Image (cartoon, rainbow, N blue to C red; front, side, top):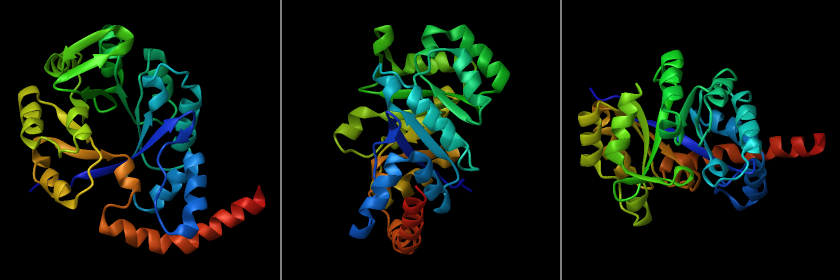
Length: 262
């Protein structure tokens, strides 16, 4: 029997703020904007909505911008909720990875380090296991570009490197298909999982329930989780509208109390 596909909300951080804002009733606009400006408050809401894990995407680290604010915000979120926090960040040192793991970050998807410091990554996986150290693979026509390293390689070469370092999970984003608003290539995902013995977390703004059903059918191949960004916050799925209706009165009350206290 297939495992249940794990849906993971993505909080994309830029300068400490979340780039996504929940869409809901018009009277909730101010509340949801406040949550985007305060990601730890947003994370608590997502937990109340029964999220089992949250993904933080450190956008600044991929834009060669100082990301200290994002890292501090990520750590604040990790201390705000009792569920695991997964981080996708272009971390530049093994020491920072260790610091984050020791401060309640339960999974880190690396990027540059896989090629700039492979020996360090190998040691990290030996120390913390491949369940904590994973790899971010943004694919554009089957290639991944590392701007800081001026390196453009086939995703298949990247997969080989992941296996060589002892990794067994990737966070895969198909940029080309997303830009064309095409659903994931399910056959390719299965081939990758089988050929490279990799578990796959898909990062994709899926917006149709039918796509979720198709992904559910291939979880037994190791494509077992889906990170959703803006599409998650836009209420594309029927159950989310129920959440918004239920939470409106409660969250408005909490927001007003918070305003009074501050």
